[in-house]
Amino acid sequence: MKVLVINGVNLNMLGIREPLLYGDKSYAALVKGIKAEAKALGLKVRCLQSNEEGKIVTYIQRALGKYDAIVINPGAYTHTSVAILDALKAVAIPTYEVHLTDVDAREDFRKVSYVSLVAKRRITGLGFEGYYKALRMIAGKEDSPAEEV
Ligand code: DQA
Image 1 (spheres, rainbow, N blue to C red):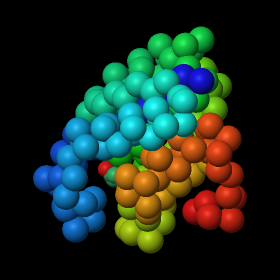
Image 2 (tube, protein in one colour; image 1 turned 90 degrees about the vertical axis):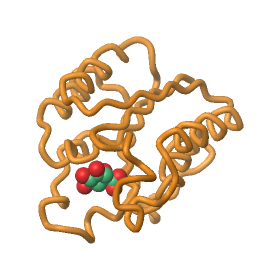
Image 3 (spheres, rainbow, N blue to C red; image 1 turned 30 degrees about the vertical axis):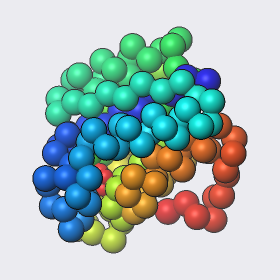
């Protein structure tokens, strides 16, 4: 199975941005962890990051016919981007929405998620572990709706 992991705006700043919220580990460390987990699960994974909404839409469009699942943390675009929602609807690839923080316990504007309208599963507040959990769900090694947020 091939999985595309997309990280959106400001996620390249992991380790620098608000470490009390997002942790002190870098984006490179996240990618390393995702690749290790994917390998252990027998999944093929590609990790992409962009600060540009249109590029994220293009990544999603190009995934059509190439990937079996998408794991996406759009960053702040989660709360604003109808374009990312529409792209995910267009390709209809099973999508797993991940957030490092517990977005629903933060400011009201973070409680809105366009991506969640199409996401098969939503994992929030688990830090890097959220991405690994999404991969395990895709691999069929874990399915625990009770733990979903
Ligand atoms: C985030 C939560 C968003 O509200 C925020 O804008 C981010 C990161 C998270 O992973 O917790 O950039 O998606």
